[in-house]
Image (cartoon, rainbow, N blue to C red; front, side, top):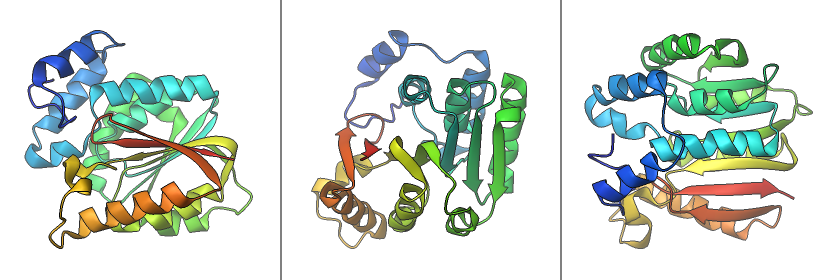
Length: 220
């Protein structure tokens, strides 16, 4: 799993060492990783094994019961969060792809977490805006189209409980956030989002060199 580490700044041996010295993916997770890898270049959208382990642990540490995810892909990140939720916990997943999430559904069922997960297909901004304003989440994860990160952030933050955690993926974008973007829309979007969060006094935040960069945000 570490031949091509998602953490672009890690060598394959160091990446493998990280995974081996944490809670490893079980058989279900490994098979989901392998099936996703067969998708080719699209497989880079899947979170890394060490990031998945971190998400499960953070879900348990925060005692989260209600979670939301924007950008589900083939379901590995959702599987990791759902496993960290209690039996009566619920995770709302927002995505637009029936094809990719059909893979997710199979593995959620096999892992025994499908009862915790609700999948809504359609533009995530519309899904989030359709939620009651007083609905609150304990934990959230954003990993979708980069130009809409700001919109997802605002819709989720308004529904995140005080003390709740929001994780945002790809905030280093392969290291390009400190390079000339040369007009790359994704790089510009990530830079603008990172600057916005850094200046937001409503939250505490820390950017971690995990995977392709993860910002952990706590609502004050």
